[in-house]
Image (tube, rainbow, N blue to C red; front, side, top):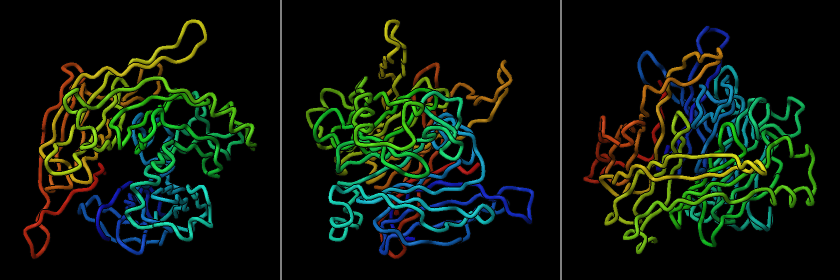
Length: 410
């Protein structure tokens, strides 16, 4: 498969079975650049190769729509789950959208390519498309809620709504987050980062409110921005519409991931991953060290979101409540993913995640190959190591095999 994968998984529905098939999708830094699918067997806990497709540039991120299960955090952000139909990806100068086979889960035809370069196809011809392009190109791909009842998110373009879902891509090269209609991937608007040189690496949409949160790779901040509700976005837009939409994207809050002492060496850290807690009361962020001399960090912020009584504008505050130093720099990873929660019925009869008072996060270390399961207790507001394992050394050498990304399949 090659080095440094980012993973996602989706469901398919074979005609020969009454059970859903789980398929894992992976990026790679290997050449040629590809996306691959791998079938998961729950009875043996093994993977078997499905297929692979070549893509234009090194992939950094993959995202399945609809998501495989319900959650308020990644990968669904409140979306109704179902059989995977689309695989969105982004990395460096390009992003792509592929169809997924509803029966096998394998990757099908490419239906759309996004070019993030100002010069378009002409500039792309001569642009770096290797893993190095990820340092100054696109880095993430996440979609808003596909539920029509959510404010700021619709049921998808095929429902006939104005726009429906919005795909958000963190674009380090433009120092901005790009917003696209989904699945047509028509560019809607850009959200410039509040500070020059921030380099937004990861952007996630709030499941219920017209908000996105970003983590900046170069400056190590977590930022909150208001976004235009999808009901405000015309189904076919002009440059005038785009300018109008961008005017409604307002910076609301910023939280520094570093202490005052650490901030004196801000360039020694690299902002990494961002996730909501399963109950939406917190947001988790990770950063990694630029070199092995700097340990990575895992942080939790209490989210306080209120509406102004006068103009109904949202007010956001991120209060730091927990800080945990990782055992290594994290290498090129220090990525986090939350374990799925079981669903329970609310008093209103709807389903919600039963959090049991805590989240479990899997943390991956690319420097020495550690995979840690860390809990966050909502009441005590603290992280705690719950389990750990380590990948074997690379075959025929003393170098540790790095853990780039981990996801929960059960």
